[in-house]
Length: 295
Image 1 (tube, rainbow, N blue to C red):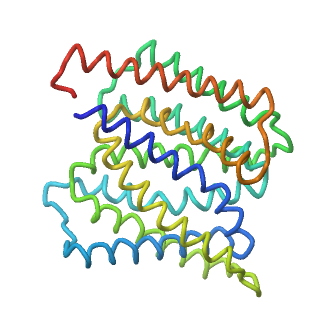
Image 2 (cartoon, rainbow, N blue to C red):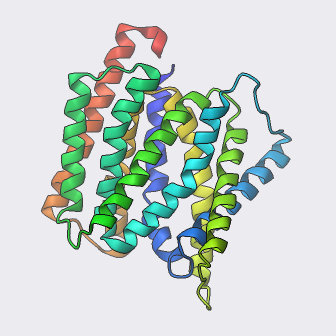
C-alpha cells in the first residue's frame, strides 16, 4: 500500500470535483436528473472506449473478481446522481453538499470497519468531528430545509461511500474495465428512468449545458480512476475526509470566477477542513516512518 500516492490521488480528485457544482448548474438548465445520468454516462463510456482504442487496451474481467462487489460498484452511481439533483432542487446546493458529506464520512467509518477491518480510532473520530463541523459552517445556515431534501441529500452520501468501499477492492484490477462497467450502468439506468417517467428536455438546449455535460462525463472518468487508485492505497474513512478539500477549493473558484467571496463562517469552516486533512497527512506520514513497507 503506497499511502503517499494514495493521498495525492484523492487530494487531486478534489480539484476536479470542485468544478462540478458550476457544471451541474449549467447542465440543469436543459436536462433533468435522469437525462443527466444518461448523457454523463454516455460521454464517459465514449471517452474510455476512445482511450482504449488509442492505447490498444482490451476489456479485462479477472476471474478472481468478486462479481457482487463489481455489481454494487457499477449500479450505484446513477442513483447517486439522480438523488443529488433532486436534493439540489429541494434545498440549497450548499445544504445538499453538507448532507452528502455527512452521509459519506459517517457511513465510510463503518464500511471500512466492516469490509476492510479498518480500526475506528480516537484520531478518526476527532478528524471526523472537525471536518463535519467545518462542512456545517460552510453550509450554514441550513435555509429552506425540507425532509425530502435532507433524505435525498444523505442518500447519495451513503451510496458514494459504499461505491468508494467497492473501489478500494476493485482498484487492484484493470481500472479502465471497472470504469466502463460503472458508466454503462449510468446510461442504462438513466435511460430507462428517463423513458419510464417521461422526463422532458428543454425545447432550446443551450450550448453551455451541452459543454457542461461533456465536462462532467470526462471529469467523472478522471475522478473514477483517481478513486480506484487512491482508495486502494489509503484508509477508506480518512480518504473520504481528504476529498472534502473540494469545498475549500470551491471557495477560491467562486471568488475567482463568480466574484462570490466567502464570509467569516465559511473561512472558519474551510480552515477546519484543512486542519483535519493536515492531521490525516501527519498521521499517515507517521505510520510510514514507523513501517517503511507501507510507503
